[in-house]
Image 1: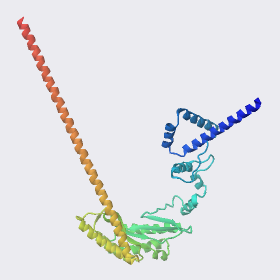
Image 2: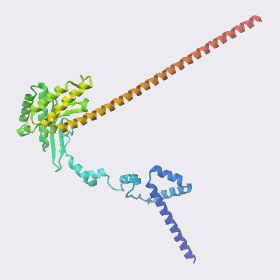
Image 3: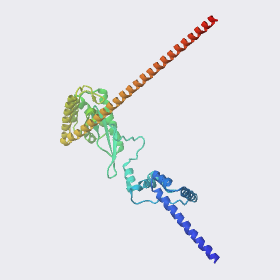
Image 4: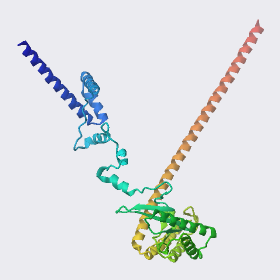
Length: 379
């Protein structure tokens, strides 16, 4: 009978212990699903001192034994957003990071890493690809995984682009040809009238010197870049044209309409009316260039109006910020001047008070001396 009682007592203690463990595990998992501030508030406000101590002892015991329960990943709920972020950063021991998986060629979520890697071109350090730059070689990858390269230079507000090629060596050779043409034009200092003939001869000489086919020269495209920062915040670039004479004609007209520039800004614009008049001439010439290049002139004018509105809004915001800064600077200067005047008045007041005190001391000293002399005379 005694053994039966002992066994029943042990089974009851195991049952109570298992219930206690389950309660602690449930409490731990529920608390881990909350934010840190909310979790600390619940522990400090809704648990007694004994309960907190018991809970901390259980956590320490589980950590020593390595049996701390893992946080369950919730399926839905906005309150579990923080837990999802934490779980996405936690990796089990021995697993590899995402960066390591990408280096090893593993596919990321949805195969995005493979697509990104297919777009990257493996090239040596000497093959510097300038993406989105004015000078150099622009490269991209099409849907079939083929790499394409386009060489381009800017000569006297005229951008020259070669045809897209898949051979990197041919692209660098085209770039060298265009740059030699650019250097020859800079050395001879061609005028607007002789620019077309000089450019044609320089291009033919450069392509013939490097044994480049005439077909590549016929694939050259030309566009005009005119600085228009004070209207649209950047350069006004026409579409690509096949005819060099047409591009040179639009270049001359756009530069004449644009007038003299100083780092992209007009230096002779006195009023907003003159600025708007010049912008209308530039817009009309740009629409004509788009029409000659096979683009929709109406759509081009609409896009220019949108860019103009953006620039106007940016200018108004900049002026408002400048005015606010000016007001703050004036207020700070006024406050500083008032403080300096107050300090000066306080210093003058202290000096006057010290002077009065010195005079009073000297008068008192003189009075004591006079009284002492009278006392001596009376004796």
